[in-house]
Image (cartoon, rainbow, N blue to C red; front, side, top):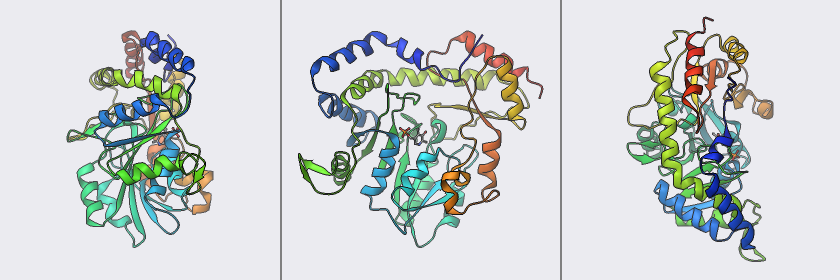
Length: 365
Ligand SMILES: *Cc1c(COP(=O)(O)O)cnc(C)c1O
């Protein structure tokens, strides 16, 4: 049996008729950018997460970049961010000429809140929390830290659509929540897409202007902005998927529960769940000391896996100019060396799950 790490075609098949009907409706409408699909999606997504405002954008990276820009975070300012994240989290900071200050993650893969104080300087202006793999960070600690030191809080929710901490959804704790709708995300479009959510009217308004070249009124430009608009087709298709997101999340929870219950190989460490938090299982990430050998073993059985992420941002070539070196963040670096995302996707059959579980349990290193 051949199993891929992700199957976006399955996610399409599940609601094929609805997607096809919506695509045709948008194509026939004659209106393709910033129209009623986008504004309806913004309303529906804001209501889903429990925020006052949502602004649709072209990508998750743009959401991060514009969030810091709208919060006036730039040159000379420092932003605390966990070391084990997708590089876009850090790019959102550096595209504004602000400085990322790396903090090690905890055992749940989010920022270690016991290490925040030590990373603080006079220049610290914000925390970027990443709900990596779909699990909520320890938001009670983070909120009190930000309040105590008068810091802005931005949430990278690119992997956490619908995850909660003490019943509250990710994206609504901080000043701005940043989402990606890249096709492989839990709420995926059929191309690129992103959004911010916020309860601050002024921030929503500013990002609305910035996404459209800095104009509020057509051909009157207040500032130099971006072209970062969510298009009507993606917004329409996202509305279809959003309606089904609760059941899609439930399906992922069921697959994860099966993995947690039935994987029992002592060579493999399973993910832990934080008390008070829910996980939407963007990835199911295991750890294994002989990870690269395990990948080969699974490849031989035609089971595909992905490493999220093999090189942490601070060691990436792109950030050589920041001057980090190997050994600076040992916990982050160890994770990069032993984490592995096993197949996890909507529409995964029971046979596929059984096959993955049996193969992993039979691994002898
Ligand atoms: C996917 C992702 C992003 C970037 O989103 P794009 O829409 O691909 O630009 C940012 N942060 C994290 C954690 C992600 O997983």
